[in-house]
Amino acid sequence: MQAQAASVLAEDPKRRVLKDVFGFDDFRPGQADVMDALLAGRHVLAVMPTGAGKSLCYQVPALVLGGLTIVVSPLVALMQDQVAALRLAGVAADTINSSIDREANVAAWRRVAAGQTRLLYLAPERLMTERMLDALARLDVSLIAVDEAHCISQWGPAFRREYEDLSRLRGIFPNVPIIALTATADESTRTDIEARLFAERVETLVLGFDRPNIKLGIEAKQDSKRQLLRFVERHPGRSGIVYCLSRKKTEEMAAFLEKNGVTALAYHAGMSKDARDANQNAFMTLSGVVMVATIAFGMGIDKPDVAYVFHTDMPGSLEAYYQEIGRAGRDGREAEAHMLFGLGDIRMRRLFIDDEDAPPEHKRRSHGRLDTLIGYCETAQCRRQVLLGYFGEEASPCGNCDTCLDQAPRADGGMEARIILAAMAQSGERFGAGHVIDILLGHETEKILARNHQRLASFGSGLAHKKDFWLSLIRQLVAGGFLSPDPGGHGGLAIAEKGHALGRGEMPFHYRVEVRSRALRGKMRSAQAADMEGVDASLLAALKSLRLRLAKERQVPAYVVFSDRTLIDMAERCPRDLNAFAEVNGVGAAKLKEFGQVFLSTIAGHQSDGSA
Image 1 (cartoon, rainbow, N blue to C red):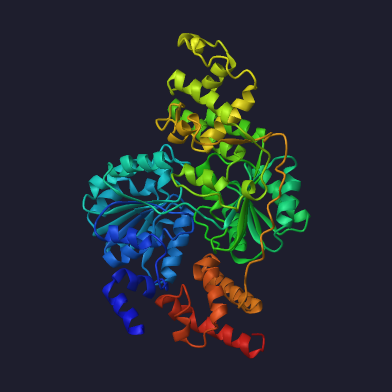
Image 2 (cartoon, rainbow, N blue to C red):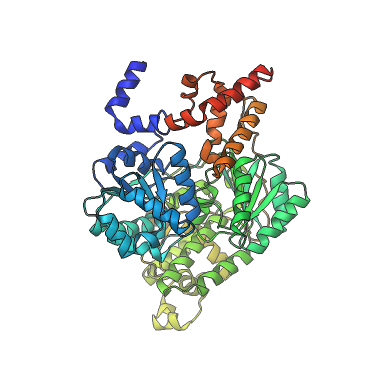
């Protein structure tokens, strides 16, 4: 068997790199397909769920191909952590960025120009200067990776205009494969990335969005502090992330949790870098810490034992929500995503969109995305079905969300839905929810009269209900896939195939009753304690303490030394020599050489104390 494994490694250079450098025995789903496409010289857009191992998709090919790989990344801190992690794995990696002094940047460039660096991390602003592009064009560039690629798209949740210029890369490096990676891209965002970055000459691999171990729940906002405390108290001793809309609220919530006996830290862009780094390192290293943060916290965070993500305020879109909840449960154990939802959130989000310095088309699209998120909050359907459906995946009811576990009151909405569908069909499926509701309520607005819609058979057909009822129903129809938002961003709605089937009476539609006036009846069942059978808790604590000391000596985050997953595997195996230590998941050749003996000594000392 060992001879067969050695033969496979010899025949497949990417597997040899995976094992020798990164210490992993096998690829995660989809990784090998992405790598094979790049190694064959094809451009790739990879859409992978959070925690699926996106970085390895370009790091392994970079080492197989040789030459220089350029990695475009949006955050300085993220670049520095990845470079530190690669260096500890024995990979020659560098970053040139504004947070480093000029002398260090010059030294890094000299290593790049001399051909010593395998991966160079740059922000788009630094890469797309004429001076940098001219210098790189003279080097042996073998691969370009664009991380967080949804930043390229005007429809993406984190659109950055600095990313737009990256479309020039395919012309400057015509024979170099480019990979764009993201966890957050619906169909229109993917189409936009394909057009902008690749001129539609790209192999798009969508590797699934489902995170079935995460329970999904929405609760009507009443007393957010007390609701948060009740939730956190159901997860004693577990790490979690709490997202707040403002910096002020972040600090207030962290102080409130601390006052009530919960170890909580704040994190937002208004804090000093030293304070942010200290709090992030404590969160990554210690167990049972709750990080209360704005969205400034999260990108690139890979702490596997985050038991929950709690939103005290509604995020801006389903894409943002998906990305943020994906920071929970990366160890595969049960986790929860819980959101408080209120009318004030909707008003605030509308104001943010209206005040944004963006063209009308972009604002209409943002309002449409917000409507879809509201529909997700209001839906009576399985939440996972709605969430995955938004990203183009079909799913059965999951049994792991509040609407499946503790069903809210529902009513048959088939007749009301057909009233909406009739008004849409008669008006040409070109208008948004507001205009459709004006038709239903018989409002003779200027827009109605200009199009003679007061003469439609459906004009005034919805007088039995008020505007809020119809608005909620339309959102739920969108969330359920019966109606489709206009992909062109003009704010209109169209009848999807499911909607036509509903109109013919071939499909049922149930809606949530009084979604805004009551808290959800059922509470999410408490997450079970992590299954740690076979792991000596005191040994694991000793290994974490050692990891923290080594990380401080090297001035890197603790997880860069070894992930929690690796320490757990170490504690389960209790290796006694370097050969056995090399078999621990996540131990490559460089880390074996640098850290093997010191971790073996800690394990041996623990066992000799009789604690094992």
